[in-house]
Structure formats: structure tokens, C-alpha cells
Image (cartoon, rainbow, N blue to C red; front, top):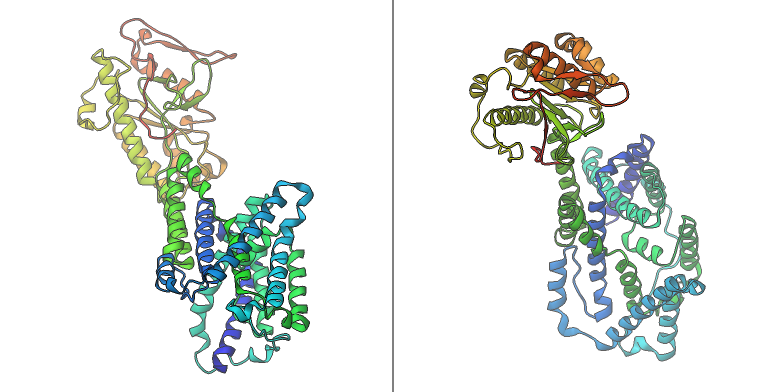
Length: 552
């Protein structure tokens, strides 16, 4: 047993140093993977688990503990025949009193002190009632003897890592798992309260704080610690505003351990259960689940997985599952970026998503789109597929126009169509330019460069030209260093989409050699104008009544 105690102390020391190293390296950024949906679902599920674990003190039954809700409920049912109505009445009264004082303190400003006074008042009331009426002798369970004094100093046990049971290397997986899971649990409740009380949270600073706490604990015979969910909830419900509350609490606990432990020996256990239950109730946020369902179904899915996973798989497992699902959604969103077809808003030089603005103008002979994400290895395939789809749709629109079909008809992109069919079209109805707005593209890797190069080569074989609009400095560096910019040609890089559209329409008109197709005029005061011909105009402006993209 002594060896295992030494091992726990050494693990606490190693966890402390691990946290300090991670904090010094500013690795707290990993908490960005804890989305609001994950945190809300986790804290709500954990609050229910912790609250249910205290039910045994309210019902007066010896319930076997569990981190899984269904097992916990089953354990309660097994021993419910031992239910003690006296303990239940006392526990229920304490919970009611705590909730009442909290409500009055929140509702009426002049009684705000009642919120902080609640746990102390209930504790005092319970002790006094037990002493006056000898409740402990009448079947009301109490805390019992509490060892007094400060735990012994244990720095001397830091040496000899492994305590003769395991090697240092064998302890590394345990230390890392404790550090990661402990930090995630601690930061989850910290983020929840930061959002609730509207203050900023430095995750790396939290790592340093946890590291110092574990090192200090390892000096005084402590096992590894993290931010306590239940005690944080109680601290929050009493109205604590800063870290000073923790200093005061620690000081009072030290004084109690040194001088006042006999005073708490006759405190009913139902008092502790009532304080914890009333504290965690405020962290159950089912309204957030309803809000997420209305606003964002994928976030609601994450919330449900986090909430139910925490309750039925355990706190640690539920958190890991929820974070894993969040990462999968991040990968999904990055692999399937938003890439809408765009058109010119009437009377402006602005180009926007034609689904969001159905009256935006598009032009025969052009495919205009915008890539709303970095281009990298994970999304190149999806970008290629969408650009091919938009080209096919635009070509078929031209075919329908040649057949005098209504421009307001729906685009069914699933209808059979091939590039062999497109090659049989007349030159006046084929696509000549692919105009891509790259303003939102913040980054491009070598896979993205290869994608653009392959697309350029394929377009050249089919007589199409790619035009890139407003790529940023970083992207341009990659395009020039790879030689792709020279292959595309400097004439096909533009500062904005409007300039690209004007030049493309002029070039199409020049190739056709027919003024009846319309001429483009430059208007310094406003958008371009098209002097449209009558019957054979293939550069006509079309008002799009539908869209070919699933996103706004």
C-alpha cells in the first residue's frame, strides 16, 4: 500500500511538470477543438451524473457509485427498498432552502448576499439541528471523524520513480492520459463559466495553474488533481467572482483541518449532497440543445453526442467521443468547402452567390465561381468535382437556350451529359472562360498548385481559359515559384472579378467577330453595360432564377 501511495504522489509530480511544460510552450490552443456544443453537452451531462451520484445522501440508501447514468439508476433501484423517509425529508428541505435562497439572491439585489450565504447557512443549520435533537442517534447519517492536521510533506518520495513497481517509461502513457483528459475536463467547465460570465480565458495559463496545483499537491501527499466540476459549480452558485475566492476557501479549509474538525463530525451527509445537487443544477443547459436544433443541426448532433455520451459512457469517454466528433466535422467542412457560382448584382460591380441572390446576372460563355476556403490536399478533389459540375451545368444551359427553352427552368445536374456531347456544340454556345474568385483563399499547398495546373492543362486541351481573380500575396508566391503563373499567363490574373468578366466578354466577342453578339463598354462611374443584339445574341445577360450550389 505504501508503494502505491508513493506511486500516486510521483504521478502527481510528473503530471504537474507536464502541465507546466505544455503551458510554457503555449499549447493551450488545443482547446479550440472544444466547441461550444461540446462544452455545453459535456457540462450538462456531467452535471446530471454528479447530481445523481449525490442522490444516495438524499434517499439514505447505500448506492454503489458509477460514472454511467444507466448503471447508477439501476443501482438506486436495487436498494430503493432501504429508502429512509426521515433522511429524504431532511435532504429535500436542504435542497429547497438552497434553491430558495439562490432565487431570492438573484431576483432581489438587496438580498444578493443570500446566494453566497446559502451553503454556509444550510451547513450551520444541519450541524445545530443534529446537536440539539441528537439526530445522529436517531438514524440520520453524519460525516463522522475527520483526521485533523495538514498532510505530511512528501517531497522525499519524488525520488525513485516507479516506487519499485514500474519503470519511468511505463508511467509515461498514464501521465499523458491523466494530463490530457484532466485538462479537457477542467477547461470545459472553465470555458462554460467564462461564456456565462463574459470574461476571457487563457488556456495556456490554465495549464500553468494546473501544473502548479499538482506540484504543490505532490509536496503534501496528494494524487493528481484537476479542476473539480462539482466544487466549481458550488463556487459559481455562491457568487464567486475571482481566484481570490479559492484563496479564501483554501485558507478556511486549512484552519478547519488544524482547529475545527470536531465541529463538522456531526454534520449530516444530506447537507453535502444538497449543496452539490443545488450547485450542478445551474449547469444543466437543455435550452442550449433546443437553440442548436433550431440554428445548426450538425452542432445539435455534436451536443447530443457529448450530452448522451457523458451520461451513458462516462465523463472521460463522453468527452473524448464528443471531441472526436468535432474533429471529424472540422475535417468534413474543410474537405467540402463552400464553392458557389456567382453572378453580378444588377447595377453594381459586385459578384455574389447566385443562390443567395437569384437575380444576379450570369453570362453565356463564362463560368464564374468563388472558392471560400484554403486549397489544400484534403479538398482538391471536391473543388475539381464542383468546377466540372458547374461547367457541365453552364454548357447545358447554353444547349437549352439554343432550343429556346425558358431560362427559368430548373437545372437538374443529375441528367446525363458528357464532354463528348459538349464538343458537338457550336462555338457560340460553349464555355470559353472559367473565372475563379480567389479572394477568400488564404493558403494553397502543393496539392492545390497541382490541381490548378492539371485543370489549366485540361482546359487548354478543350479550348478553355482559366482566370484567377485577386489571389493574395502568399498564394501568388506559390503560383510564381511553381511556374504555374507563367503557364496560365499574366493577362489572366485580375485584381477583381469585374475586370476579369469584362476582358473575357471582349475576347469572346473578338473571337466571334460578330457585333450582333453585343459589345462591352467601359463606364467609369458604374458597372459595365452590354449593347445587346436582337436574335442571335449569345452574350446575353440571363437572370438566374435558380442555383446550382447547396450553400448560401
